[in-house]
Structures are given as structure tokens and as C-alpha cells.
Length: 131
Image (cartoon, rainbow, N blue to C red; front, side):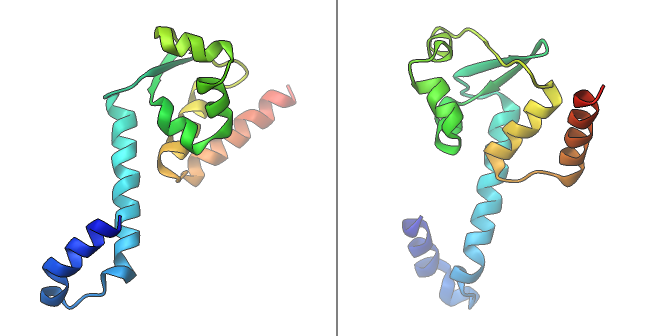
């Protein structure tokens, strides 16, 4: 990341007269978050498939493992799911809804969650627990 900043400073800082340290991190975070969401949505370069309520979700093991210890253990440990992933077989995820899993993946990929999505999932889980 510092290489990119150094390039920006040397190329454009004097022309723009803007302190890139002040805005660069925010812009880079937003860009990275958007790029990762695009990667999730495009299904490009995926190497793991999850199956939730019959719906397939394509994802990237290294990203999931880097962001979540649970997925790290599941996908790179000695669990059966790691073997399934290596074979290209879908990994079944029980005890959740497809929409909740989608929200989880989007959070892992972007670090963001829409409050409306979260509210819907909490309401859904509450009604499931008490019916």
C-alpha cells in the first residue's frame, strides 16, 4: 500500500495540492470493499461452493479464511469440508437461511452490512426461535 501512496505523492500530490494521507485510506477502503463485493457477485475465480437451503454460493477460500477463523478451520483444517472444497463439492451449511448466509458473505467480503439486511435477519431468527 505504501508503494501506491508513494507513487501518488510523487505523481500528483504537488499538482493537486491535496494531502493523500487524509483521504487516501478512506478511498482505498471503499474501492477495496467494492472490488471484493464485485468479486463475490461475479463468481470469478471462486474455489469453494457452499449450499444453503438448496442455493449455491460461490466464494474464495483464502479471503474467507483471512477474515474468519471459523472458515479458516473449515476450509484449511482437517475438517471434512476442507476435503469437499478440494474436490469442488458444495459444502452444506445447515441451520441458517440462504439470505442470512448472503449477508454474512457480504460482510466478510466488504466489512459492511446494511442495517436493513441485519434487521431482517434478526427478525427472521427471532421468529424462528419462538415459533
